[in-house]
Image (tube, rainbow, N blue to C red; front, side, top):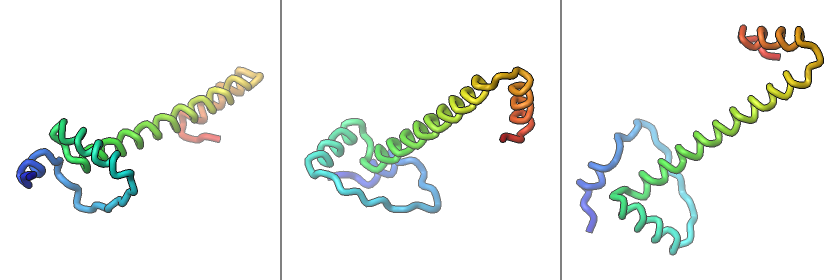
Length: 97
C-alpha cells in the first residue's frame, strides 16, 4: 500500500491554480507506465508533468528555429547589402517588418 507521506515528500510544491487533464490510455500501457514511474520513486502525475514541460520547451525551440530560418532566408534572398543592413538595424531597434 502506498504511503501518502512518500507521495507528498517526492512531489514538488503545487501552484495555486491547477487544472485537471483527463486522458484515455490503454490499460496495459498505463500499468507499464505506472510501474516505470514507481521504479524511479516518482508518481505518474510527476512524470506526466515533466513530459508536458519537455514537450512545450521542445515546441518553443522548434518555433524559434523555424523563425530564425525564415529570417535568414529573407536576408539571404536580398540582392543588396544595404537593404540587409537596414533590415538588421530595424530588427535590432525592435521594429520588425
